[in-house]
Length: 427
Image (tube, rainbow, N blue to C red):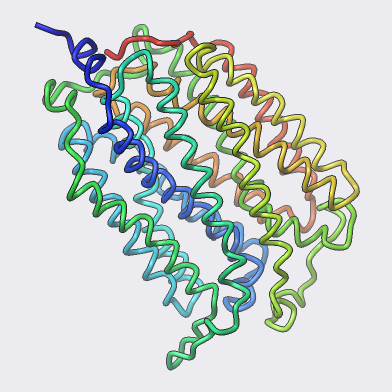
């Protein structure tokens, strides 16, 4: 009689690569859903008459389902990984699409929140589901490869420059002026809906879930798990807070269009009127595309070295991310700002990929709710980051940027307290 790990070790083949594509596409859909709003800001703010505070609330809306990760993770432990992925992906796609037809900001915000209910749940479930098919000696590289698809979704979202500036997409639907950015919102819902269809029709349930059935959920802040849970909570909070900066990159790039620090050029009230946003400046989207593509070196690096070094060592890249954010604040030219943003993007993805591996291996795989809990903590940090940026970007821009830098440094130092999980067996 073989153990679970022995059985999985001898069954690696074509199916696992197909599984990587399916789970990777679901992971990419998360990136598209989270990041698409940031590319809407320069244009949608005009049609919806948004202030900077409104934009901060809008970018935070996708993270507002604070307990989403835990709830979906709990359901995955009880009902099965595949079933939960189908439901959560469908919820995201439907409400994301409906948001494009909203004529009012409050309704658009509500629908984005409902869409965020899904995003909070599928990320931890995807990684738990995927890891349960992977042999121990290949798990680190394969999970790193899965995390790479976030970059693919990032790049897809950055292709906003192919849609939003196009005047042919402008259609009048009665009282609704359907601008090109609304078409972009519809297109961003396609990855989630197509991913749900793939899991519904083609993907099997996790073999580990089927083998173990309804295992009781242990408390993650007691016994031997207490120390690692406390450290991981801090790391998740610190790394997730930077979404406040990431979601505002297109807006910051627009502010440095004429040169100087992002904090030196403050938007004027006239920016709320349509004439200040049209024609759309495509350079902002091209810069976003370049920053998204700069994930590639970091993703390749983690795939190559994850199994040999382990995730804990790579979490130290958070300290390099901290330095790059600090330098973004002090630079004085647009080229320097773009270059450092690319460095930040390439280095921070190393830490995220490492966190995906470490978070998966620190806990028994039947506890998807454990990783979901930490993802929920990350949502809280992301909400706070976006709201703080929205409130302060026009008055005290230095505060949120330097706060991101400080938190990334803190996360890097705390990660040293986590145990090494290199090539550990799943329990």
